[in-house]
Structure formats: C-alpha cells, structure tokens
Length: 171
Length: 446
Image 1 (cartoon, helix red, strand yellow):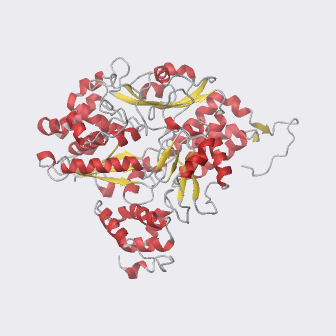
Image 2: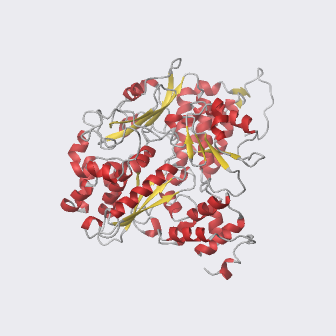
Image 3: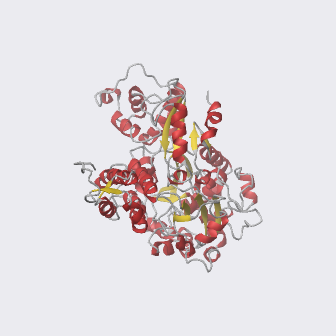
C-alpha cells in the first residue's frame, strides 16, 4: 500500500515520529517469517515499544507504512493486546499475577502492599516515572505464587516484606 | 524457573519420556546433550521406516490425547488434516501460549527441553506434509523465548531444520512467534488470527484449521506437551507408550502433573496418565500445617471444582469428565479450608471477564455481569435471586452458546462452585430477604 492511500485511512497524528533504522531492519527481518506482512505487526509494535517505552499514535502510522497495511489494522492490534502500551509507562513495568494459584497464596495482601509502597494503583505510574503497576494473567509460576514480573525478570514467591529489596535493583 | 521435583534416579528413559533428560539444576538441555540421550533418533526412525500414514496410525494407537486441556486425540486431529490427496502443504503451530490460571507445565519444557519440542514439531510436520512451523509463545516467557530461539539455531545449523531436513529431501523450518498478552490467544482459531497479526478473535468452524487455518492453508495446532510426547511414541512405538499408563488409565503415556496452592511442596512431576489426586497431593507433601483441603480444581481455571473425596479418582480425561469436571491441563490447585469459594469464584470470573475478546455477546456481557453478582455476594450485599441468576448465567455461557470455549470455560468453575458450596453463596445474600433485611433494593443495581 502506498503512502498516499494510507494517509486517508485514519486521523492518526504522524508528526515527528521516525522509525529508527535498526528497528526498520528488525521489522524487515520479522516479515520474512510470514507469508503476509501483517503477521509482523505485533512484533513491530513490540520493537517500537522496546525503544520508546510505549506506542504513540504516530508510531502506528509509521509501522503501517513500513508494513504496507492500513493503519486501522495496526491500531486494532495495538489496542487488543495487553503488553502493548498505548500511553507512557514508567521505566519498569511490574506485572503482578492475579490468577487463581497466586490468589490462593495471598496475592491480595501482596497487591495491597504494592499499592501502599508505591502509592499507586493498577494502571498507574509512580510520580518519578520509575514504576508502572499492572495486573497480569497467570505467569506459569504457580508453584511459586504469589509471583510477579519486573521487566523481563520473574519472581516468586514474593512476600510483602520483600518489596523494598526487590525494587532496589530497578533504578 | 519451574522445576521437576523427581530425583534423577526415578526419571528413566523407559518411564519418563518428557523429563528423563532434564538437568537437575534446571539449565536447558541443548543440542549436544540432547543428542547423547537419543535426541532426534525418532526423526531418523520416521524418515527411514515410516510414512505420514503409518506415523499417524501409530499415534492413534498410542492414544495420545491433547495436553492443552481439550484431550482430543492427537492422531485423529492429524488424520483430519491428511484426508484427501493433493492437499496444499500447510503449517504446524505449537501452542505455547500457556496462560490458563494454575498451569505451569509448558514453561518447564520450553525453558529446559527446547529440542524435544522441536523434534516433536518436525515429526508433526512430516506427518502432516507441512513446510513451516511456528512456535506461538506468550510474550511473558522471556527466558523460554531466548532458549527456544537458540535451540532453533542449533537445530538449523545441524541440518534438523531448513532445506532437505536430515537428507530426507523434505524442507521444513520453524519460526518463533511471541505474543503480546491475552489468554484468548490460546484458543486454536484465535491463535491463528493472532499469528496472522490480527486481533485474537476466534473463528467460526467449519472450516476447521485442519482444512483451512493459517493463511487459508491446512494447519495443525498442538500444545507444547502434546508435541513433546510424539518423539517417544515414534521411537518406541504405540504399545510401549500405552504401557506407560498400564493399569491406571486407558489414555496413553505420562502426564506432567503439578500442584499449587497451600501445600508444603508445590511443583511438577511426570507420572503415568491416570495417577490419582491423592498420590499427587502426597508428592506435594500434603496441605501446609494448620490447613485442611476444602476443594480443588483438577486442571486450571476453566475446570470445575471437585471435593476431597474425588482425590481418589484417576486423573485422566474420562474419569475426571465423569466426575463432572475436566482434567484440563492436569495441574491441580488446592483450596484450603479458610479460603472463600465465593472469593475464588469472583477471582476466576474476573479473569475470564478481563480476558474475553468481546467477539460474542454471552461472553462479553455475561462475564462482567457474573463478576458484579459475585462481588456483591462476596461483600455480603447479595440480593435474593442472585444465586439463581448466576446459575442461569452459567447455562447461557455454557457449551454451544458461544464461538469458542472461553465462556464455557468460565461457566464450569462457577456452576460447580455453586453446586458444591451453595451455603457459602447464600451467606452473601442479605437483601430482599424480608423484614429482617429492610434495606431498599437499589433499582438496576446489577
């Protein structure tokens, strides 16, 4: 799809967003795995997010152009998946597992301790932009509940008392 | 990192096809170590002795049933794809999107046995005349993704993937596709949509993926554990595989069983299919001190609650099915006596409500409604009729009313929780009970 045709597809701001060359190469590499470029859209969103922390509207347009698919398709995907962030998040995202096995091993006490320690609730970011707290589906760490992720790291079982020490490593 | 809690002495090649190679320290078994322990021997056997049809027949006789939770015969699924001559070549998709609450078995295989999965997928590709495989892995499994990617590169460099696989004249490769969150991606047709880079809404069936799946081509979707069982079936034969569960179950092979909740030693074990719940709970060291068992889920959040007496039953698909629940993924979650079933039901329904893709109405509207009713009961502010309403909702969310199994999966724990623990739900009803409860009933409170 040409630029001209995508430009009429949706009222998405395009100002100022340019895909990094490395990201364009990574997206091109992903495309090779699939018979249709749209299949690379989720990975493209993740690539952009890795660099920018989140996915602004203008990045949707840029990815759409890069893959040659309508921006609405990318937007539809970006709004569906929980690990694609459509607004700014903190430097570290804490994913707290709230599924049944963690629930049965005192998740609620841990959750409340996080709320108290960080002074925020789910979906919020600390004022210093250090942490964003989100709930997440079962992390497949049910033998270690209650479990959580910070960035790429999985922890469990975690007690309320361990929260300050746990967070120290994430500046 | 999930760990298998059996000693190495207990895990032997003859009895533990999924775990005998595992390192005690939980590090991944990479190519050299894997090859030293019969790794890829099944592929060599398939290429020299088997055809697509004989391999599938072997799998059918072995009675390997899908380990993702459905329990559908793997051999039968493959034969549905193969029907008719001259069909276009298609795809093998490994469902590694493990998000079922209470399920933590595929993570072990992905993080520590990547070549076993790759070998299973090669055999699936050979049997189904595929040219490309995808491992659809949830985005949160970061370590697993790194390990699997490294194993794919090893396998490709050694000639087990790519052009002319192991000199067979057949081309087959596998790509790793990582997801971005949403439980619905584990549903077969939703997974295919997600793989294609779309929203993960389920597709109406027919056509079934075996005829028209990813990009319109025949597509086989199997769970990680299912695929990891295939090499041993091919290498040792169907009779051997059936024999692993001899006297315990008609279902073939072993199962990665696990226990979570307030037990002394939560973890994973590879045991013969049909092992009883009691034996499993014993392996887990029993309940933590000061706790007794109230109820349990046999295999994830989409299975129905069972009682302590049901622990005597064999944990296999048919037996647990007859008891009114489902084996699901075979990882039991125990509920202690001091834990509220109403609260747990609310937690489960919240999960399903949040994860509904919204494609069809019963699921999109019914699940949040059930959460509101359960929240009221949990807070002791339920109204007369709420429990009946929840029961009727469970029917409306049940099998046959929705595109996929998400809502029926949500209905099963809800209906069984009310069935076995109605008194707990009734304690939450305080409104509309007559003069003793004179609070006005808010209009439209639901």
